[in-house]
Image 1 (cartoon, one colour):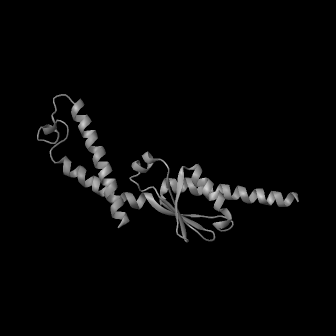
Image 2: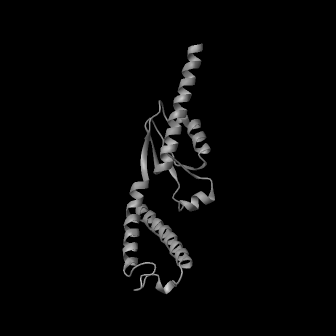
Image 3: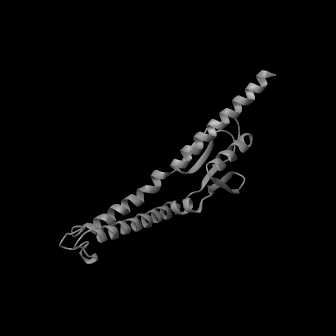
Length: 168
């Protein structure tokens, strides 16, 4: 069901953007009225191009969630509880806020209302707790950035602990 909702949200977003682009093109193209946009004259678009454009948008909208919403593994030396402070710091630096903790997973979302709106309120990242590997699910580009940061900070924390123990 979430997949269908994400597809519909993306379709509406792209449809609105397309309407704005067509509106602007119609205003700035000389001798074209809104009634001529998709008419026989073909002053802006040829006749029959609107259904083709809508079919293309529907196809893109159907594929979009499969390409952008994924699950990613994070490999750390320990469990979620060992690196809870590091994980929270990374999410905070990435401008995410804590939403909920249901025992098995933790959920974060973007701080910025504009960023949330721009992502159609599909901005949540869920992290499963437990032993390594931990699993993140959400938008691909955010997961890549956050997972790399968590792995780097966790490695940095482990290196600093091993240096402290070596110095003793």
